[in-house]
Image 1: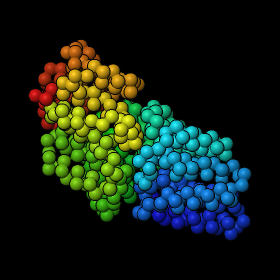
Image 2: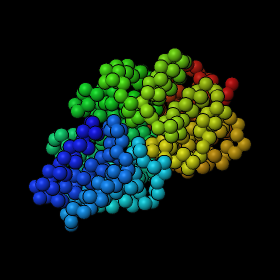
Image 3: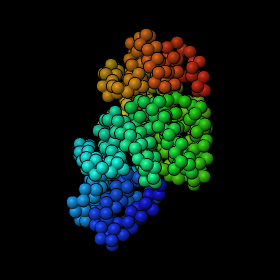
Image 4: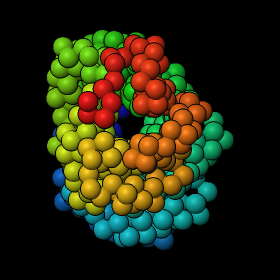
Length: 418
């Protein structure tokens, strides 16, 4: 949980292995130390410079020999440090996606050959990140589920518990990206209930909050938010960028309720988390756009989503790509853009297979064409998919009835920029 201490112990273990005459074990520890500095960069008080991590990999290569486990650990370190498959907080703003994918796939293959499921899980984590950079939303979700399957076969130990906590967060996150809201909430609940996080409740419930916000469940999200704030304050208000999506989601819910004071309070917390500026193009853009569209400000929403995904690839692709693209199509329709048909077609090609994002695009097209039948059909899709807010929004579009929105405890929606 504390990256700096973890790093110190890894280096001490490598030194002990060298003194014991086990160079292969030393190589594994050195390579893992380099990997962890990127994989768990958010847990470090002081970031490990890339040059230092690369030096650790070089040292590992010198003593690895032909040991399969050491070679697998080095391959994972290369994927992490050289290609930034994990999206480390101190990684390059861009990376060569094909090379990142190839490097992660090699790490998975070498880890699989060792028969060490923990090593394979870590390599799959790198592959998941590379798939996100490549825009392979459903591939990353499948990889995340594969990690859970592997780990569920292992006995509970400190090492497996730590890996499982990471995997549960990743599978909840990846499920959100693929539009599987019930799945995301299920995994997030398992993460929240894990005993390893009993004393860091703000971290434990963060993905439940994010999932609740995207699904449009104000009651659960706001109830958890108070527990989050209390735990975060008690922990000393740590600057943890990984908590940013949860906090931004709570701010959006308060905004949808019309409570600007509470919204500003949560945006203040967000500002204390130290999130990279680029995140403004990911979850911040998505949550801001939802709120702007709710209050009939599609021109501002379209401006908020103005950059094409390729222009802000690193921050949009992770789990926000489908949401970003679908909301941009809706904003274009409501803002009366001249190229809405083309935007809708392009969005549909990106989000195909994502139930919620597809329904947002379908609703945008129904609004463009004045197709009441198709509009109602999207409401049914949202309801089945567990997207309560988008269902209520569709009902308000269909007949102007705000009852569903009121039942959620949200302010009345302003449709079509009226």
